[in-house]
Length: 247
Image 1: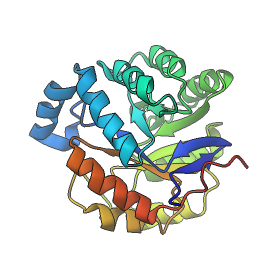
Image 2: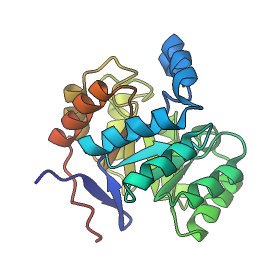
Image 3: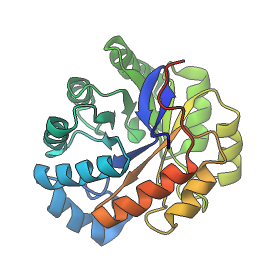
């Protein structure tokens, strides 16, 4: 039986989650991102349909930022699949409101947005992570400057998980070789984003590479059923979970 989950801090987390960065029109997607934003962000049924199809292919959850109608889409999915897992990142602004929304959606992990984490403002990071932990949720940070932020987090932050760019071409990784070394020798739990390097890397190549490193799970933005099927099947071929068994 193909494993679909891994365990992070005793919590069951999908090996692959559908990401929502295309839904918000994230900058790395260029003009396509603007089209996807207009198609998805305020269309909960369209997002929910893609999330449900991804669930059926084996991606048992989503990594979300609580913007637009994304929270509504999650609620629609859970009417059909109550065990649909949410991991989330805060928006760059309105962080505490974002944390509350994610807590209300029973998020397993909440990552503080990369624009905040990468600023290395210890008191602010510590406050947000404590709010998350006090709600019984795993706290983490997202980063767009992974080399310096992971080092900082290891020594200065109570959070336990990191969402970071990780792919075979070094896209957004600062220094691929150095980041590989840092990740492979860290006790933090890592979830990879930008695994397909904004569509420049094939899924098989991406997940084979990721499987060779200390990465617990991945989140990948998907915009079609065909793309979801190919990507999810490739991820589950290479990523080795533990079934989500608490340790």
